[in-house]
Length: 369
Ligand code: SF4
Image 1 (tube, helix red, strand yellow):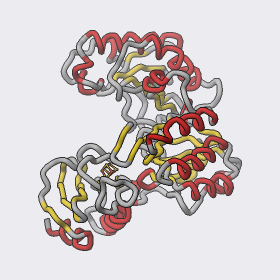
Image 2: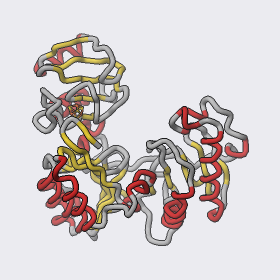
Image 3: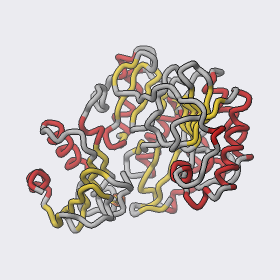
Image 4: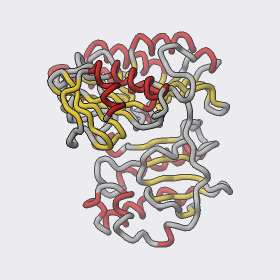
C-alpha cells in the first residue's frame, strides 16, 4: 500500500504465529528497508513502513526467504483471519483454521476488509476483535457460526463449519451485502434468517498484559510500535521460540519461562494508560506529519489516567488522514503546521472544536474545553 511515508508492507503471520527466525529477520528488514520500526496493528498483523519503491522487490524476496509470503498475492488478501491465541497443532482451532485456509479460494469475492475469527480455544479470547464470520463455542461447548452484529449464532458440527461459512458468505453476497461492506452493517439492514440465530456464544473475553494461566506471557506494545532492539532483547532474554501477535496490540510469547519474557520495553501489567491511546508514527518518521505524536499521546494518556477522566479513548494523529485509528475517538488531536487541532467525539477529519494548539497548552485546553 502507498502511504504518505512511502510503501507500507503488511505481513500476515500464517496461523497467527511468527517463529524466532522470522521475528529476528523482520527486525533486520525494518532497519534495512523501513523506518526502523515494526508496527503491530490492532488486527494482529505486522507492518513495515517507509519502504522506498525501488526497494520493494528486494524486500519481497527477503520476506519470501523468511517464509512470510503467500504463493498467490490474492490469497493473502483473503487470508484475513484471527485465531485463538492458545491454538496448538491438531486442536479444534487448528483444524478449523486448516479447513478455512483450504476453503478460501471457494468463497465468493467479499469486500477487502471482511474477515474471520476462530475463537474456539480454552476461553473466548477474541470477543472484542472485529471479524465478520465468527466460529465460537457455546457455554456447553457446542460449535457455533455467528454473523458479526447479531447476538446469536447457528450451531454447526466441525465438519459442517466451513460449508456453513460458505453458505453465510453466499447469503451476504446474494442479499446485496457488498453494498454495505461489512457483515454487521448488512445484518442491520437485511433480514438474517432465523436459522442463523439460535444459540448464544459463551461469555466473551480478552487477554490482558501479564502472565496468563493459559497463555503464559502476554505483553502490550504501546501504539503498536515495535522497536527492533527491544524485540531482539525480548527474544534473547526469554528464549522465545515464537511470538503470536494478538488483537489490541499485544504479543503472546512462547517461551520456557513466562516470567523471563517480562521485558522493560513492553507493557506487562493490565491497565497501562498508553494501551488505551492510539498514535501514528508522526514526525520525523512520516513526511506528512509536522508534529511528534507518540510522546504527546503517552503524556496525555498518563495524565488522563491520573485524573478522574480516565477511560476515554485518545488518538493523536500526525495529520487528518488518521492512519492509526481511522474512526471516532473521545478525544482526537490532529497535527497541522506544527500545532494541533482538537476534535471531541469525532474522527481526525471531522471539524475541530479548537485549532492551532501548542503541545504544551493541550492538557489545559482539554480540561477547559
Ligand atoms: S496519519 Fe500519521 S502516518 Fe498517516 S499520513 Fe498522517 S502523519 Fe503520516
